[in-house]
Image (cartoon, rainbow, N blue to C red; front, side):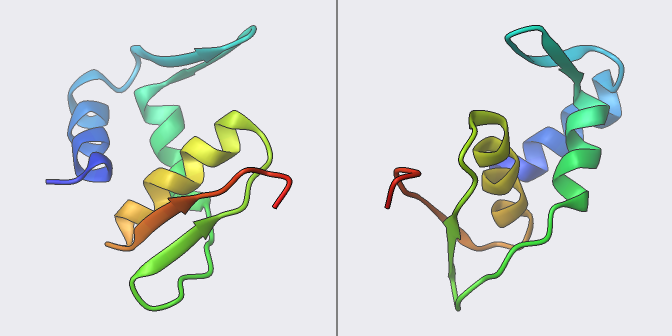
Length: 79
């Protein structure tokens, strides 16, 4: 089981409960899972470079990479 599988399970069980709060923005498990499923990534073999510059975007891409069974690689946004 990877983090995407765990998120999917939690979204089924606790879909309307808060998953994350960033500043004043709040996302439920269900809302975040929808965000992850809508994310389109470029995957090179088994690896996926996370290119988002904000924290929520990085987290979304991380889970989306795991959805595709790719290895997410986080880089500093200035690279």
